[in-house]
Amino acid sequence: METEFTRALGIEVPLICGAMYPCSNPELVAAVSEAGGIGIVQPLSLSYVHGYEFREGLRYIRGLTRKPVGVNLIIESSSARYLKRVYTWLDIALEEGIGFFVTALGKPDRVVERTAPAGALVYHDVTERRWAEKARDAGVDGFICVNNRAGGHAGTLTPEQLLDDIGPLGKPMICAGGIGRPAQFAEVLRMGYAGAQLGTRFIASEECMVHDDYKRAILQARKDDIVLTDKISGVPVSVIRTPYVERIGTRAGPLARRLLRHPKTRHWMRLLYSLKAVRSLKHASLEGIGYKDFFQAGKSVEGITRIQPAREIVAEFARAADAPGDG
Image (cartoon, rainbow, N blue to C red; front, top):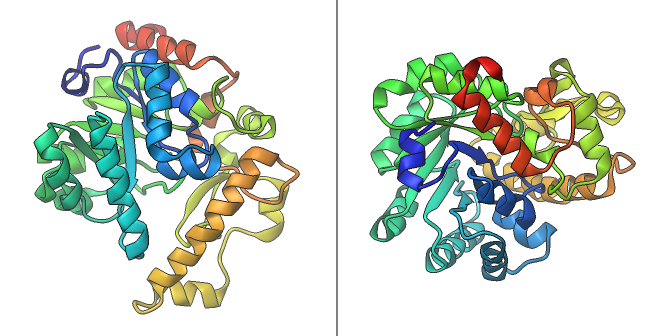
């Protein structure tokens, strides 16, 4: 099961618990790392949802596991104030010994420049070759390849298409999206990916501190129940189709769409949507289906049938990778 990714990070299983707002509580992050994969801290989730000052939260996680953990940094540049916070989180994470960063949106050159002296690795979220080329030119170590089955901000290409598209760039690739069963994990490793990133599967874990309604919605949903809506962040996001989603629809209004397309207003609109999303997703995950909001999930819901401890999930996926025919 050793891959270029596991060798670089010193982990046992090439499996990432992806950063999820608001689902990435410290106990979940630590449990996945302790089980042999690697959990990723989502700073806003750590502080705004779960109440930890960032450094304090990292130290709490370190008290739960001494194994590697990572930090997610969203570096989209629509807000200078937010970016200042991002680079403060980065500096604190480096001071606390974090050696793996997952960047998303924007150009990761400043993150690479700051992490290189510490020997930390940076992988960047990509959905197609042009973004991968920009990230490669910025000096990243690998790619999180977000496909069309992912939760959250999904891509448009299949895992196979992403391999063909981005593989020639010669950096390790992590498959992100649509992996809910151990056999699917084994399959993407056989295809040539250096690892896989799971999100939805770990929401349906004992350690994830979301409302039971959210977990039940994942267990009951099928892949056809996953729809795209641009009402959360202004760009399409994968969510579970609930009665509330059906009632309000999945498309932003004509004025909002026009403002999102206009070069002078789109950054402000995205910021407005993001602030709204931070509040609504937090309430939905903590208060359950009675709260009129969204449950994010990917098409991997099709393979998720029970809630388990994170260590059992990682162990099942590891066994499937060792014996692909038994997944």
